[in-house]
Length: 121
Image (cartoon, rainbow, N blue to C red; front, side, top):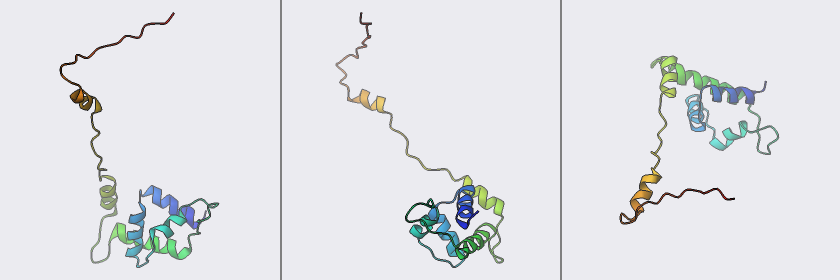
């Protein structure tokens, strides 16, 4: 199993987005761009694929420890951090009700007509 596989599995298991991974790496004083990070998650036969080195994975794991446990001065409970992350609801826009919008556009002087499809012989 390669470092890239480990990195991918951790990202999926912890439901991390690229910007969150960049923040976690910054906690370990390791700066990386989103495009460099995306190269680690590509397929091996992709032209922009890049192998994840030991240093990147080590810094990610160290940053993940700081992210989950906190520091000595400001300790955190890892369970609460993970629960807080998974309980954040995704904000979605309410879907418009097209039928009511169409009914408003229909003139009130026209009665709705129901058509029945007759069987052709």
